[in-house]
Length: 640
Image (tube, rainbow, N blue to C red; front, top):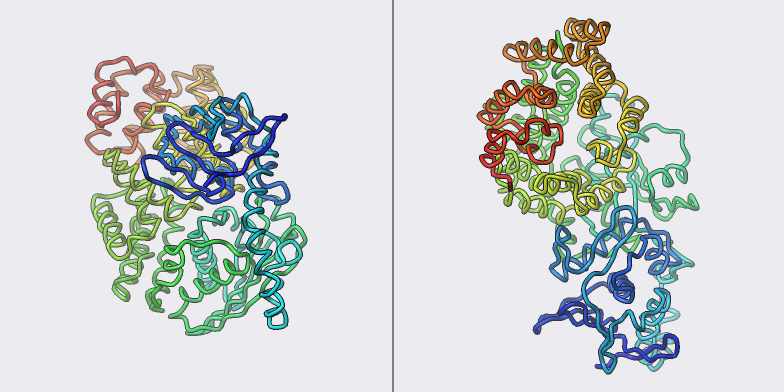
């Protein structure tokens, strides 16, 4: 079939294109090569056409959004996903792109050769047209073909069904006059109406589960739980919350649990107008809790007309009943896990930390005994590995738990993400990448998966990459309240920006204080580094070690203060768990090769997490040329 022609500057140009070795037919929404055809969504095809008519040019994201979605409010991640779909169709690797390059903080550029077909074989740049004209031509061709058919049949059909059409169907078909287009959504924390504070964990778990269910829908941007929980019991108006989160839809509601019965009320709000689009109350038995959440997610998806793949339909339906005792044990375990996380590394609380860890594991294992198919409990056991003091026994339990979760249900994104983490720390690089991609495929709204995949790409390259930056930016849009980019302190951030971030948003985070101190030390700003290390130690209760730094600070001997402190730090780590990699970092930066390499060798034998950062971490610069350091990189399996 020949596509129609459009006119640009008086020149007749055929709309079919060849991009590289691929035939692109916008009228059919297909690309093909060697007899293989692949279908693209109409909007995705429009993005490709727009880029193809400006080959070699960097098109700003704002221009592409305004061109392809002129009458609809959409966020950048819609464009990011469209470009990802094009790359997937072309089998293009974003790290070494032969089709579309991401230009960080600017936009996208089509780098493959472009040729116009059907009698116009000159390059597209000679007859390129504005992005708006490209868009109009696509609509014109589609409208012409569809209009002829509809014009013949619609009149008869319309008269036949007009009187029978339900009002709700007319409202959904009305488009602009009915349901506003919603492509991004945030689920606010569900209110606990029981009056029992012990049920807060239950309400939060219900919120998290609903977010998880909606996050399965690849066509919908769903804000991360870590962002929405900031709005628990907030007085802010919904339009203000929506603007802060960058969404056009808000889900809010309440939970009331009484014995074995649960009542959930949910409503969908179109935030720009603060108007209610849908509301429903569900009364269910506790065992049907996941089915209930699936019902809510499906109803919301239907209401906003979000397109679901057959696999997503199946995932929303294939849910098991929940055992009440398993659920209660799981929630109790999460309570103890939270307390253990707060206590880790804090001086004087070692026994309390150990007790909370023991209680959490016992609760999760009890949940599994009550329901051997309850996947959240398995994943929670692995989550215990996020704590600093991981014993061999706990490591073994975590690995077995992840394996069992994947065996029970291979479609759980979090299980694949956990498996990717295990493979990464086992230095099984290619297998880890496969699992990261699988986790993102199953849950494209997982900010954690995007961040960790970005880190993986940078680890392999030994530097920040455009593909990694794109993943970080997508994660930031999915979790806008938490600074996903700032957490990894990319090269674009000044140290003063990092300090402002920590001082204003996380002043009591010992982890970020330590990371900030390390960043100052790497920049040879030892005075500021010592100041941050002192704050870190005081937050953890190590006032005696802080005094060592204070003495050196008073003398102005900042490097000497760090060395004196590190001796005590390493000695303390022999009897109390203290991350040895932190000392290795600091010794390496100071140029103390023997101390740094000795700690690295110990970290290698213990399979410590630091080893994955041998290539990408610039703090190793003073010792990077040492043959023993290069040998460690080889032994870990990283590319040279």
